[in-house]
Amino acid sequence: MNETRTRTDGLRELFAETDYTPVEPAILQPSRVFLDLIGEDIRGRMYLSADQAGEELCLRPDYTIPVCRQHIADGDPARAGRYSYCGKVFRQRPEGTGEFLQAGVECLGRTDLETADADIFALALTALDRLGVAEPMIQIGDEALFRAVLDGLGLPAAWHRRLGDLFGERAELDQAIARMRGGAQDTAPAAPALARALEGLDPEAARGAVAELLALTGLRPIGGRSTEDIAERMLEQAALASHDVTTDRAADVLSRFLDISGTPEEALAALERFAADTGLDLAAPLARFRDRLAALDARGIALDGLRFSADFGRRLDYYTGFVFEIHSRSNPEAGQLIGGGRYDKLLALLGAGAHVPATGFSIWLDRL
Image (cartoon, rainbow, N blue to C red; front, side, top):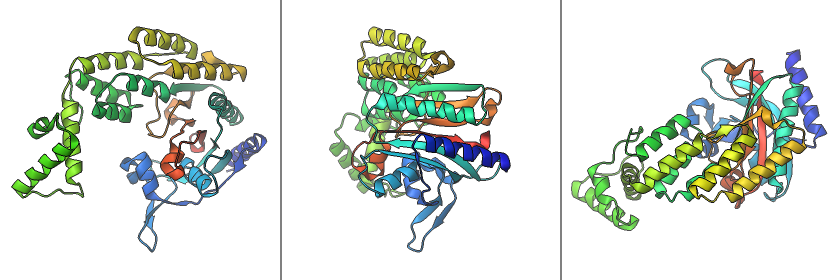
């Protein structure tokens, strides 16, 4: 207990020294926010309840979303805000208590993006040093680079959406890429004959065809799904089941991109060659990559101690750029000790009305 208190006190002092305001958002949060942003998979890990009006609530499973909700509620979402926290979060887990400590910071509204990324990363390393982790393993990635590659491939919307959803899970991405080539199928069912018949129809005509079929057969949509939902799903199945020269080339390009890894400087050189060879316009994200490396170097961070992987992402839709995870070299099975990065989409998804620059990290204190 004394060791835990020493750690948390040391982190609070560090965050105060760097001008991060301590906050403690409400423990009870609306569950729909986390389900919408993280996905239904988290439902089984949350502690759920309901208020007298019937709204489903949960004990906060993390701090980032509650801190951002509080920032929006307290004023103009675009304003600058620097917040720190150190308290309990609640997640059901196969082993250990479901109540544990998490610490971290969120930096909102700062427009010098690459410099802010470097400052947040440097603060994470300082926090790790104060916690006594001497030999960290550090992995970095860049969601913006992957999105730029995906945007440049000219894929059908269904493939663009599917691949974007899978970023951060390499095995699932490889399976989807194999399907693009007409090879191994992923877990989605093969497109039925009706879906293939709808292929090529505009959405309005497809909805009409599905509605007519339901009327003729007397079938009714189940599970709250509308005729529009069914038609859209069938069109998506048809698109995902087809492949041609475009999808074959896209599969090759994506596989090459996802294999890029190494020190940041090695990766930058490989990314520049990749852009030149494929003709994809990666000028903007590569410029940000260079500027970020320069900012990290200016803070005395040894770049050769970092490992960049093009396939590394954080599997949450609101991340938009630089991401990182830090593990202990002496105890890698403990999982990530620190995870964070840039998430410029989150405040808009929470109702801010526009994207707000945002970056931060969380520390899993129970894993130390």
